[in-house]
Length: 114
Length: 115
Image (cartoon, rainbow over all chains, first blue to last red; front, side, top):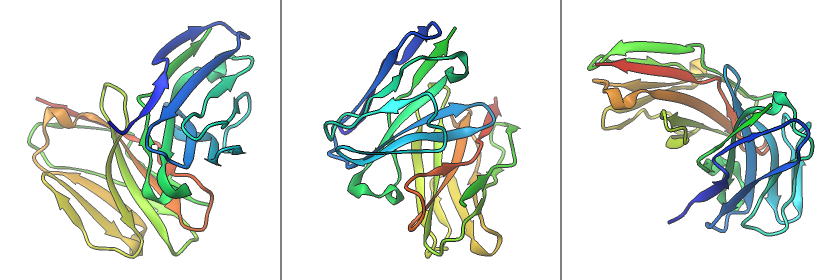
């Protein structure tokens, strides 16, 4: 089944403890992206990647890192999480290096930082 | 810069009523794409429709229909004879052919269908 897989689905952590949210897609998509969803703000882009070893900042990149060493994987790294990073996170991918096809989303990761 | 506005934060209707979700967008690009996604209570984001800026035909899919009007920069979504399973948060989104490589989302409309 074609899908984007995120792990974990739920995570509660403490301030300052490094964490990684994994994202993997099995559709050979070039483009991958991370979004966060917050009430009243919709979804906002954190980082995106056009292909392997090509990443760029989105609208809210502060406090996050990403890497794209393989085409299928695009992990989101929080080096020192803070409570304002409590949010619902989505990984997304799309074929052909163009977002105009629309995204396939992962199931989401609900992160709570205490 | 691209922008999407969903002015209705929450809508509540009784089952079988028709309901329209509004979406207004801003873009400087002449070629762009509009999307609707559904987020049910389980939390995942489900693709509903994609429309490009050169196709102004309205689309109908079962009880769902979309009205695209370039003159008013709107892409509204109507659910006919609503059902409880339609309860969800609905997001409208926009991408530009020559703009930033991302979908820009509206704030979302929470739709509650009461039995």
